[in-house]
Picture 1: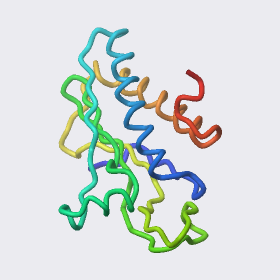
Picture 2: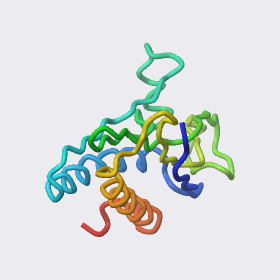
Picture 3: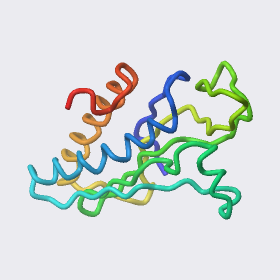
Picture 4: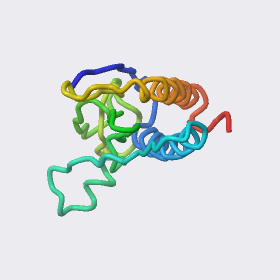
Length: 152
């Protein structure tokens, strides 16, 4: 894949809440843009892969079940996902604060990427630019105000 953009998420930001909100926001924004441009735009939540898929408690202790979402505009697919997952058994200065030695998922960057082999169509480019500009503003809202939906 090719990384189109990488956004570093500050350490004080709750990873679980951020991912849950960004996945919800993407679905709403894609529907809004699709209405205005008369083109099919879809989002698909991308779930995390757990080391132990049989344990539902690992999902809740490590935070969000999502790692991002996939956006399809016409025949072009772009993934908006976190970089690498690690788990932190206790709070540290480089990860969001949690109490009582609760494990949590830790990652640093939110990336926008596409497959090397996928060509971006001329009709998809302006729509993707519009969506990604809105995503950038939504992430800024989250970092500044604690909610991606701060301006709604």
